[in-house]
Length: 346
Image (cartoon, rainbow, N blue to C red):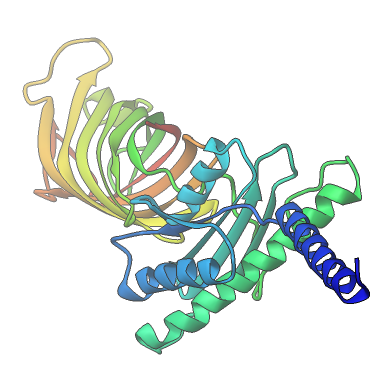
């Protein structure tokens, strides 16, 4: 073989070897697929950010797939993390109060989960902010994957999930919003501003909460018993019940503690009985009620949450009296209803 021909074969051989080596390295360094969470019912900017994020990831060599999800973005990220059996990165950009949040999770394949979360104040740029948010999401995906690789190669000791925030923020819980049908129970205290003393009762509530934070519930409290009341005709025992339909709105739905405001309408029943068991001439009264108040929902797990509510109860007519032997006892409007319990979402 002549030297020129030998040199050609050597060059071809080196090139072929370089291609094989490069392919092997590239294959070994192939990043995991990235699931981009998109909420079709979100505002136009967030939908555009999701579309651009997928496009930027695909252009950068990632296997980007779009995951349309009707639930809040943190819930979707949690569900993806639970369901996946292979190494997978997931990314979502969403509104959280007055901030815009980008969150990335890398889970699966027996590796320690890594979470990075960046929050910035909402901009007033409209759709013009979408490219900037998409690029920030891609860079956060890269940084999270690097952190995941470092955590996997550092040691076999599990590494706690890390959270990266541009502003002060708590690490998100595994599931941050109880969306769907729920039923719960607990105790209630009904205290009159003037009139009867405090009544202690059981409370049941059942309803539905949507992805947008609006919820509706049926609330039943009773029987509520008070301590014996002294009147001019002797001691009496008082029992109260109420039922109301409630409409509420929750704030900070991606946080473990979620405040809410509620309004309701319903009916209130009071019954007076003397201690000797005899029935008075006029022993009970029904009134229409309206309620307004606030509360919190504390997320305890994927389906379980604690609730606490404090509401003002207004009855109509306001001056209903119960008469017994000339004794006049006012129902007491407004009253304060406080409830504490646990609920399960299905």
